[in-house]
Image 1 (cartoon, rainbow, N blue to C red):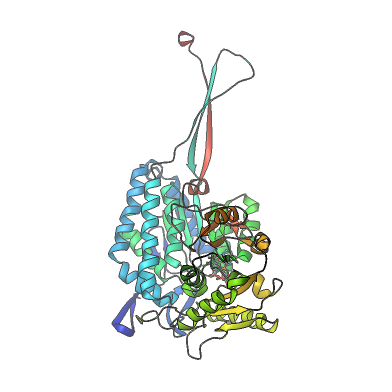
Image 2: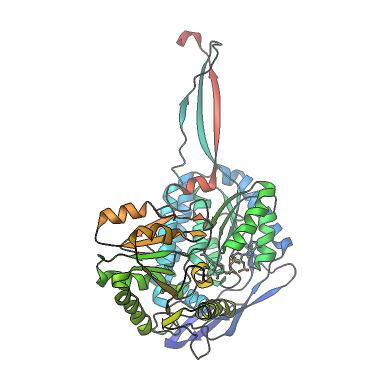
Length: 503
Ligand code: NDP
């Protein structure tokens, strides 16, 4: 049953039915299990979604497999797969305001962010991958056989879709992450079973309605909501799933990698981070100070590339750390439907516990807050943007991913130590360097173990640019031309040619 919820400012948000999309049909979970959906800004339950079990996941995977093997799918022209993605992009554009309201309700982020960041990224990604559908090129190779049997040997390679893809997504950019898995899979000829985070599944369910409206063949994209340890695990373990595309925590990524080894599934893992923001003394501080604040606070710090370790050259340490703290103090927290709100709540009580616990441990170990350091005294999971100083490298707050609006500012006493400081983490996802000297910027960029290094900016993501992590931040790359490796296998076809009349 669908319902509509009213929010401040007259926003009416239609909630999609919390059912599973399997083989083009909406259905309830076989076990009738339900999961409560909580508005993180009010802590009130607003809806329920289905809790899929292994039996539901099996139905979804079987459907995806049937569609993958079908003549319809195998013979579909690549350009027509691209056209399906374009249709979906047009429908999302048409309903962008409705989808943005739903994202704000479910995830808590401000409406202007849902509309101008999440929806735009989603539509851009669909268009970007739509273009790739017709560009699955191979190579033509000349061979050098070590015998002469009168034949001429040649080979060509072609890209083949891996098959059924299991997409598992987190709650920080729910719709964007769903498209990040679906769009390349469809572009490169795979079919998909998607398991969104149980914390934020509503826009993915609304996307399911648009998938049907776009005329995407039944079974090509299936959506199973449910718990990670049950539905997610069943997807990872299913023998017909050939690839897992996962974004989430490093711990879950490690479990998925281990489980995937049994069937030698392909995996791409986009995991956690502890990204450094490095401000050198020659930086333009009018840009670097808001830049460092913007590296950590947007989306309430729930961004995998958030700049949560802020390294500042000692001569400008006070000016930069106090500048970032002053910005933090000014940020207005509140309902994402309030037009003045700049930061929404954390996603859940569990995330609040994690962020509060890590900050408390940092303070017990000697870190001091220049701003924030506590949750707001109100209902909703609102945590004050926090700048800590006095931290040391061996503290939990310096080493563990917080995934909240919390940054630890540390001085750089010797620039020759920057490489060591920046790389002193198990993660390697992002980093930014703030300086006017491009020599320093590029030489330093080459020394940092990170999938992405930004210069005089942070968190600029574009589907044209490969994205992924080094070390415990993940395996493989999404986006850009590298996405083709993630969703296809290379097949080599080798041939012997012989026609004496042609030599
Ligand atoms: P998880 O990694 O547990 O969740 C991410 C996704 O994986 C969700 O869909 C989850 O389902 C699913 N999942 C969980 N366990 C399994 C499993 N055994 N097999 C298959 N799928 C599974 O992240 P959390 O939501 O628990 O967040 C914890 C921490 O992870 C955060 O504090 C943050 O540090 C990090 N994180 C990083 C993200 C990133 O973008 N890199 C995004 C989100 C979190 P369900 O939600 O239903 O359990």
